[in-house]
Length: 147
Image (cartoon, rainbow, N blue to C red; front, side):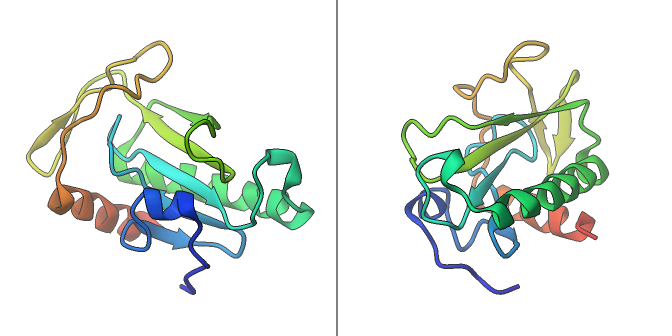
């Protein structure tokens, strides 16, 4: 995996340590604050501050990235739904928060993960407490499911 040039948003979310997969135009990263089990950030590599500023190739690759994310998270954690949030209020580089949704609590690495917003909008203010070690286990598990 060739590591892209890291933008400020990628660094804020822990890159390069949290990068699960780097495509040519996008990086898939673990969201360190796990609102739900397997919450990710999908960050564009282009220096764009608006979704409309991305090039055509980024949009084409976004299709592949989303398919790969959904297949992988389904294998890894059997989510019930998945939400993509493009907020870009604090971190202006183009990115999505990818939030797998769960009707019931999930167990992983001796921890219980609650989807506090289910069945409504995700509650990003709720964080399932994880440390670097648990986050690393989540990253490794996702990578093993990435085919």
